[in-house]
Image (cartoon, rainbow, N blue to C red; front, side):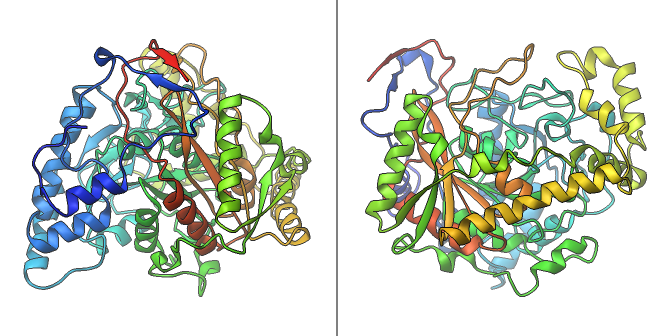
Length: 539
């Protein structure tokens, strides 16, 4: 890859050597890309880590302001022009002012921590008390300017981060329709996958996943209810962490489910995930569940990142993923062998079979209650879920040109939180905790692993998502347990992720395991912005 002369020695060389173009297992088919079907990428800071950026700022080779300007230019060249990823829904007019303030503090000898001056993009369902809107991608919420930051944004600002802007998402966090197209919103349009532009970025944190992968920012924040961090991280070839529900506050975030919702880091490597996680934690009086995290958190999660973290660990690998698409199965088997090489004992498990006994969901009743509560105090033209539904119907040609709003309508009719039906469903969903914990105890497991998702599917606005199979987000999502995905390799240039999860507040364990695997494999590869899937292929 051609890189311009930017810091010729040291950091730039480290960037290339540490995160150079990797490849999947030799037996996995790879794309043969012709010269006219990809985008020549000459970005100076491709694959730069938070630590490397800090070193550059400390040495004076970069300032926070010049760094922010560099990424803003990158967004213009890659997101709005060139490949036109459409990952960023809005830029922050205050970004350069924030960066200048961080530069002044550094010059005065004050550095707030590892996120000081680092450019971050935020998913557009998270309140920022500034000039930017918070809309969940919905035209119904256009003009909603939050009066205050979400708690995690307050934490992020306190850590010295520079908020560059907001990312597009699957509208209403992919909870609007029964036939959605991931990465599309009525306000933001369709986000693309930077590996092959006609492929899905998945969702709902589509823009955050695409932006991080394409190096439009240093790191980003997504949110998840069931796979909305894990799936787009897998599809976009990055690291994504869904923390334990309760580790991060949800106040100021447009909700789906207070049982399952959480925000989380989306980055290009495990170390940056650990750094960003430490900046976001905190007990919030406005979100009572965060009180359960007291005494279980760390300001520095990087202390758990050790190359030998897998030595002596017992890892349960989901057996059902050993069948299916030969490419994904090949990567999965290679990952299992790598775990063994790194000193882990591997045990086959069948968690997916046990999870099928939970035939219930709390999402629609909790969505109705949560959204009505959020809108009641928001600066939006709609004040209830019923108002949103009515707005979409009145503006169908622009708000719903491809798919409709069945989930919104069914949620509006859902039983309330005092109903017997809801309480019974909640009990079933909560049983996921016992199923996973019992399985881990029976097999004396430190963690559970499986494929995160299959091969990224084609974008299809008319028929909706087709999925990629091999989906493993639901168990940890329903249980509220921490879950991380890390690149496992590529098939025809398309990335596939490996999932690792464990019991509540076991972030140190899964971060360590993910780091050991990452360092031993280096599967993360910068995208080539291939224009479409019509290329030659070979083995």
